[in-house]
Amino acid sequence: MSSLIAWILRAIPFGTIIMYGALGEIVTEKSGNLNLGVPGIMYLGGFAGFASSYYYEKLAQNPNPVICIVLALFCALAASALGGLIYAFLTITLRANQNVTGLALTTFGMGVANFFGVFILNGASYTAAPLANKAFSAKIPVLSGLGVAGQVLFSYGFLVYAAILLAIVLQWFFARTRVGLNLRAVGENPATADAAGINVTKYKYLATCIGAAICGVGGLYYVLDYNQGIWATTGQIEALGWLAVALVIFTTWKPLNAIWGAYLFGVLYWLYQFLPSLLGITVPSYMTDLIQMLPYVVTILVLIVVSLRKKKENQPPAHLGLAYFREER
Image (tube, one colour):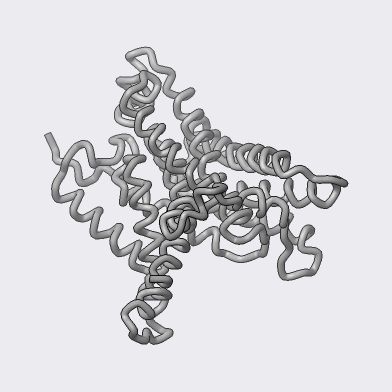
C-alpha cells in the first residue's frame, strides 16, 4: 500500500508539469500554430522564476513567501510569453517555417537558461531557492493530514490544483465563449474567419503568447516545487517539454483530457520504479529506458485509433497542418 501511495505522490506532480505544457500548447494550436518550442519555453519560464526568487531571497533582509511566489510567477510568465512573442513574430509576421522556428526556439531557450544559469551556479553543480520551494510546495493545512485520502489528494503545492482549474476553464472557454469560438475558427479556416470580421493576426499572436506563458508555468513548477527549488544545468526540462507535446496529441486537443492524460503519463513514466516492488519482481536496469517510453507508445496508439475513427471533434485544427488523416469530402 505504501508503494502504491508513493507511486501516486510521484505521478501527480510529474503529470502537473507536462499538463501545463500541454494546456499552453493546446491554446497555441487552437489558433493554427504548431509551436515545437515548448521545451525551450519551459526552460525560460523555469529559469526566470528561479532566478528572480533566488536573488530576492539572497538580497532581501526578510524575504516574504508571498512576494517570492508573486515575483517568481510574474517573471516566469513574462519570460515564457516573450519566447512565444518571438515565435509569433517569426512565424506569423515573417511567415517563417513553424517547425524549424519551434525547434530553434527550443535550442534558444535551453541555451539562454543554461548560459545565465552558469553565473548563478558560480562553479557549483547546483544551487537552490529554499524559501521559494517551501512556498510553492506548501500542503493544504488540515486536509493534507486526513490519513491516506488527505495524503493522496491534498498534499501538493497550489500549482497542482491551479492546473486542474485551468484545464476546466479552458474547456469552458473554447466551447462556451465567443472569443474561444473565434479562436477555434481562426485555427480551422483563417480566410473564412477573416471574412467574418475576426482579426486573425491578433488572435494568433495572443493565443501563441498566452499559450507560451502557460507552458512557462510548467517549467517554474518543475524547478521550484518538483525539483525542490534546485537549479542545475540538466536536460530534464527538455524531456518533459516533449512529453507535453505528445500529451497534446494524446488528449485530442481537449483541455479536460489533459487532466487524466497527464496523470496517466506520470503513472506510466514511473512504472519502472514502483511496479516491480508492488508485484515482487525484479526489472533489469537495461529495461528502464524502454519502460519510460510507454507514454510515447500510448500516444502513438491513440493517434492511430483517432486517425482511423475520423471523428471531427477528435481532429487537430484544420489549419495546423496535421489534418492529413481527415476524410476527404
